[in-house]
Length: 240
Image (tube, rainbow, N blue to C red):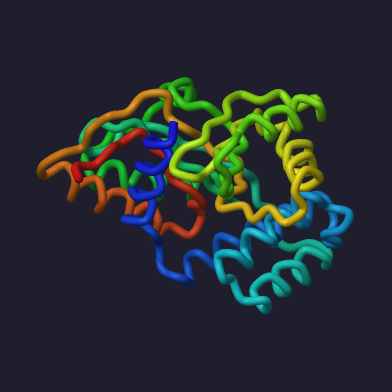
């Protein structure tokens, strides 16, 4: 699992969008989360966690405040989550999560990228069954036993726990996110999460080599340029 996680982080780093895209992504997600559960982070745990993650990614305070102000007003956009799936250049399976206020526009833009890159956009369920939908926590540590014991005592349904290279990775169902984070913080209030997110993890890996590497990076880059796209998940691995 550690290697798969590292591959994913490296591949995402290769296709990372510009700061403006990162700010836009967080701004939209904060808006949606605040709109759904309230703009007070103390009473909206999902919002509090998201703001903490945004700050860790160096999103400016004014971007966060603007999204919260927007969410506190009447009306505004009505963003809905959407998930698209298919086969990327090189044969890797890919999932694309989006927040959109116009499904037809977003689908058309994503379909255009698939067509331009000679990739195959699939129907719902065509590849998502090959990914585990999980809440992931990664933090420094060298012994997972007390962590597992604390989570079990908190009645957390642990999917997997792993210790590798001085980092502990905990995977749980998405619905267990806040219960898990609370239990970990109660065990160690000074814990600094390297990763705390709900994600899709591939159950298999697919090597991407040769000319396909450049084609895949172009494909991911074009997707990242789309305003509605939030995250790209895939099972591709790269040489080196």
